[in-house]
Image (spheres, rainbow, N blue to C red):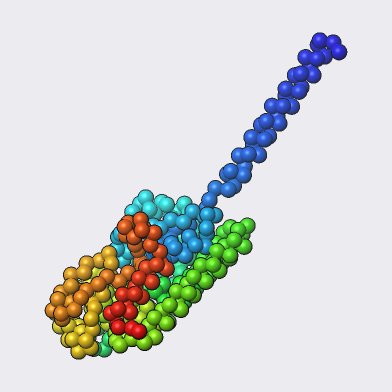
Length: 319
C-alpha cells in the first residue's frame, strides 16, 4: 500500500475512533441524567418516615420543617418555598394543620404534584377529643372541624404508607414493584406495633389520658381511652385559671398519676398542674416533629410510639 493511502486509512480510522469515543461518552451521560433522583418534600415527621420507608434509595425525601421546631408554628421562608417548587411531589398533612400550605399549593408550578394526606385517612372531629368535665372551646380553633394529628392512630399510618406507595408508583412507575415491597415491609412493622398497643392497654387501672395540648386524640380514640387536654389543638393557646383548676380537680378525683406534655412546646402549664395536684409531669411525643437529639439516637415513629406506650402503661397502671 502506498504511503499516501496508508495516511488516508489512518485518518479515517482516527475519525471513526473519535466518533466511537464521543458516542460512548454521550451514552454514559444520558443514564446519569435520567437517573437523578426525584425529590419529594413532606411536612410532618410521620410523613417523612413513611415516605423514606416506601422510597428506599430511589427518591430524595426532604422534610420542610426544621428539626426541633414546633410544627404548629412553622411557616416556610422563600428558600423553602423554592425547594418545594422544584420537587416532583409535595405532601402535606392537611386538615388545617399547615395553614400556609393551602395558599402555597395554588402558586406552585404545574410540574409539582400536590398530595393532601388528610384526604386518604380516617379523621375524627376535634370536639371528640375534649372531656365535658372541663372548659371547652367550640370555635374549632385555628385548625378546622377535624383533629389533624391523625398519624397517631396506627391504622391511619398504614393508610398513609399505602397512599405513598401508590403516589410514588405514579411519579416513578419503573420502581412500582420496589415501592410496593417496601410499603408492605413497613406496614408489617406497623401491624406489630398496633398489636403491642392492643395488648399493652387492654387492662389498665386508669384509662384517662391527661395532656397539656390536644395532640393525642387519635391515640386515645384508637385505644378506647378518655382523653382530657388542658388546651385545644393550637399549641400556643393559653388556658384560663378555671380550666387549670378543673384539671387539677379531675386529676385528684380520678387519682391520675401523670400529666403528659407535648415535647417541643412549653411544659409550664403541665408542670404547674402536676405540682398543684401532687403528681408528676412527663413528656409524650406526638411525632409532628423530632429533635436533633432524637435523630442522632436514630429514633423513629416505631421506637417513639413504643416509648409512648411504655409511659402510658406506667401512668395508667396497666397489667
